[in-house]
Length: 183
Image (cartoon, rainbow, N blue to C red; front, side, top):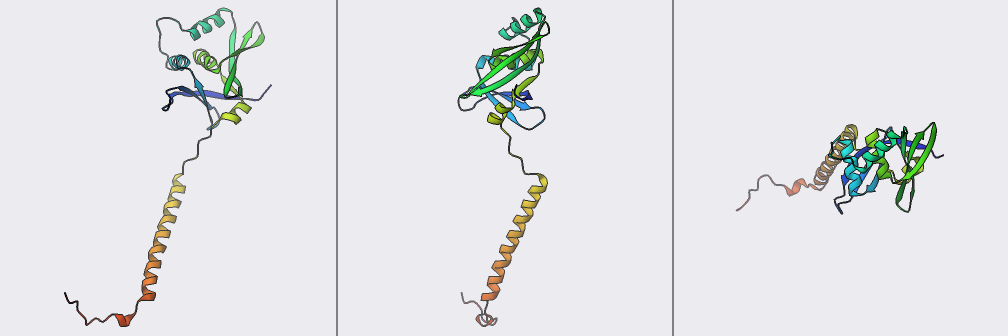
């Protein structure tokens, strides 16, 4: 069984280039993210669950939640188990009568169900290594002040170099204080 990494739903976003939806999963113990492109309806289902929006009639994922509960099953976790040819694969891990069962599903459906049932979300380590994103670190305040100080020192040196060139090329004989400008 592959090593799994716990994540949480960070956000559901809209791509500015093509209006497709992306769910962003964030690793729980690290600043690493996994973006997964999902359908419009799945994005809506995840957002409704995350924001606790009440709908007039149960949606498909609400039906699945009710079905799991009515069968006295428990959703142990949902998994993003693999990635092949840019397609993510997922599982629902259910416990029924003391026995664990893995049910193949799309990760977007698994995430919508996990949001409703407050189930842990796990991602296979190789999937996270393959498609995870670590944001670049910002320049810290100390680094910024170091860069600023270095820039100021370089500017000061440039100014001194110009003055040194002037002094080296200055000829006192070329300067006659008795001469006045004739305009």
